[in-house]
Amino acid sequence: MPEMLEIEAYRRAAEPVLGRTVSGVHAPDEWYAKGDTTTEQLRAVLPGVKVTGLRRIGKLMLVDTDGPVLGLRFGMTGRILVDAAAPIEALEYSSDRDDPAWDRFGVEFSGGGSLVIRDPRRLGGVELDPEESKLGPDAAAVTRKPFGTVISASSAPLKARLMDQAKLAGLGNLLVDETLFRAGLAPDRPANSLTDNEISRLHRTMRRTITVLGERGGSHTGDLQPARVRGGLCPKDGAELVRAEVGGRTTYWCRQHQY
Image: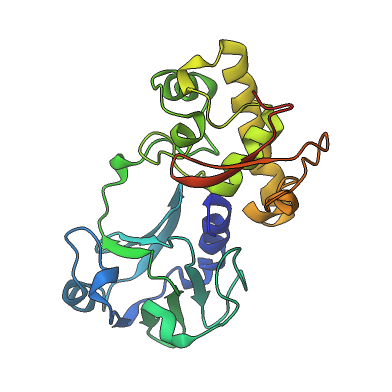
């Protein structure tokens, strides 16, 4: 599933489209146009604009143009194709098929080339001028003090707080489970029950986990990942992992060293 690491890979892969001018828009699915945006607007507004920049905030990829900003969200199964090539060939928990019928949105460029979102489950979306202020600070850049404020301000389960994109942008199911596994913290613990030392440890671990898994190639490359199955054993101490729903997501953790 695409989390912040995958979206960053998408952003880098899209760099060849910088300076190109949009000549056509493929927007067949009204469901995929989010917010106040419509497919009619996408087809009317985007042709003729030039791509001037590419950014990422959390899981949101932003395509800056000399017109509107184009916001791209990828949901659980969305992949980007740039000039028909995909930087990530397959995603965890997505289909192994590669069907052009799943192309929910795309733009073509003058002189050739394209940028396409292929999304089997239609959980992503496209929006013109998305409200970036609705997202919290990016998890890869947030410093200790604002991170501590985010954690200590809520009694929600720790995992749910870490995945609240309005408070902290970018972390998904796999990155959070891996971070908490490494930090030795239980995902169902109230966020505001953490001590200052535990918050500091969590912040350091989160930043390190993002770096390490990014270097390895994605959110699915964590040490916990092979054991995220029913009956899986903790890679650290061999205890059977707990499997439960926390914050609305299937979660794996070890009660022996995560508390």
